[in-house]
Amino acid sequence: MTAIRLDTTDLRILQELQNDGRMTVTELSRRVHLTKTPCAERLRRLENSGVISGYFARLNPAAMDVAHLAMVQVQMKGTTSDDLEAFNAAVARVPEIQSCLMIAGGYDYLLKVRTKDIAAYRQILGAVISKLPGVLQTHTYVVMETVKDDITLAIPKPGP
Image (tube, rainbow, N blue to C red):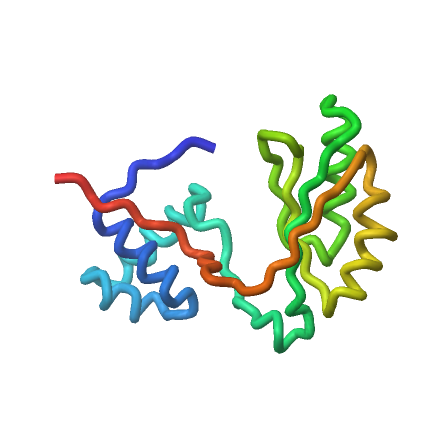
């Protein structure tokens, strides 16, 4: 996927949608000072080009009874393409793993894991995460407080 050129109006559309992804095209067009048809065309272009990859509801983990959050560093036994593909495919099937990032450094992956409580986390760690393909060792950091967890991207300021 190649990046597309975004103008000031595109950037305003993206900012507005990050603030409220449920607004109508009519409301969006009003906020970005376009008529409805050109606004809808720009929105379709942003979606079709992959700049906008989807829309979703942000859920409250405490209300969903998965407020326990742990960050898990994973070190792999090997890092061949086959090792990594097997691990990646297995991680995708574990609903408690909210995020999986391949990282550089002393460990190979960083997992964001949500569970009901520490007992549920311990069960997932022992029965699932430690048995993922290629795992050599893990190191867990239990999150005591989330200070910032922004799901939006910083919208670049348009040039002169």
